[in-house]
Image 1 (spheres, rainbow, N blue to C red):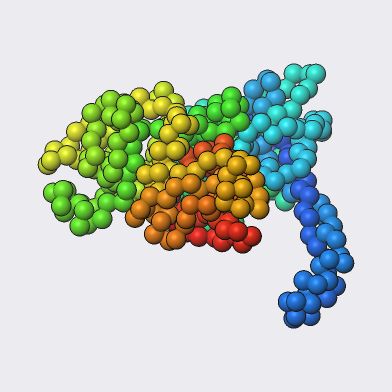
Image 2: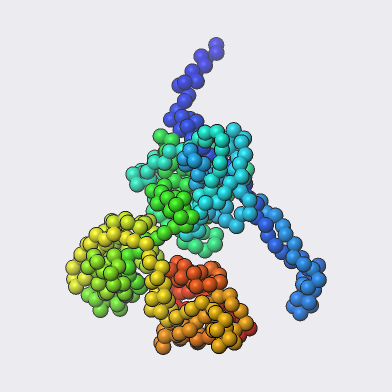
Amino acid sequence: MLLPAVHAQERRTPVVIAVEKVSPAVVNINTEEVIRQRVNPFSDSGDEFFDRFFQDFFPPQDYKRQSLGSGVIIDTKGYILTNEHVVSRASTIKVTLSDNREFDAQLIGADPRSDLAIIKIISDKPLPYARMGASADIMIGETVIAIGNPFGLSHTVTTGIISAVNRSIKGESGRIYSDFIQIDASINPGNSGGPLLNISGEVIGINTAIYQKAEGIGFAIPIDRAKRIINDLIKYGEVHEAWLGIFVQKLTPPIAKSFGYPSSRGVIISKIFKGGPSDRAGLRRGDIITSVGKKEVKTIADYYDLIYGYGHGDRIDITVFREGERITVNLAAQRIPEELSDEIAREWLGISVEEISDKTAKKYQLFTTSGVLITGVEKGGAAGRIGIEPGDILRQINQSKIENLKDFKKSVISARKGSSVLMLIQRGRYGYYVTVEP
């Protein structure tokens, strides 16, 4: 006797409904990167001089490398949210929808630190989009759904549960990523940029495959953290970080002891910028920051990760230890004024710079006008301690090339959070990489 067939409606679980709702908004992203390489048939000769000699006879050739990823359409205008590493260095970006429509996409903005990017497509027909939910109230053990294109298998659906939150992981590049959602479903490279959904079909995270050694483990960027970054990328093409108007430094046990602080968790304020948000809120040099918002600050990396979650105009509760008491102030973050880059460079790196002009090029007998000229070096400053001198040319800060004063200002502001800075210094015809530890 045959058992009666189960009615299709009874099999339409919440997972099925959520997938039906969101799948049309999940896209396949195909990128193409042009790589220029020099091919030398004698490269294995073992003779460095011989190899360099033959480089002149074998011009570089261009190769195209393709990669796949996922994304999710977030509004009717065609904005697509994905991972930064999916579209970084891409010369062309093509997007395929679930109905097989194909589009050329434009990169709107990308943020390597958060591993998020926004691309855009233009369609003469309405586009499906996914509704963003919230990640603040996610529960350990709740069911989640991941949709993406692992290994090119388009619109693959996996389910799992939330395993943990607030995870910090080290990516393949060595960069530390913080505040991740951990799920028990593996995320493969093709899944990167696809949405993580709750049972209601709302996007609560963006799946990312930055930790490819994991088996049976996946990570996603919380959507609450992504929302502010998305807004900045769409509006400015880059992220405008919150600025509190302070410098902080690592809190060592000896420093903590000298301030009567019974722990080494936190960061200490080493400088207050007059008229900045912290100055107006009453914070002082020597205050030890113990929490930002309601989250504890354990290390200097924690501090910068937490501040990165805020934007211009956001109000932030900062708790500090001062003279045996804990004090909480509420301040309004702002965008760092570009004109402060000169002051930051002097106080932090111990250098003053200016644009290279014909006059300065002649004065210092320079062989290039690319970069910025170091005109002053603070005695005892970070740059001076390693031998940088007036007349040297600064060509690079960390991974950012310095072509002019505008590049310098932007790079200094971006690099100010690090405990050390890699710089490329040109002296005469020769270039040297140096590490400056402010």
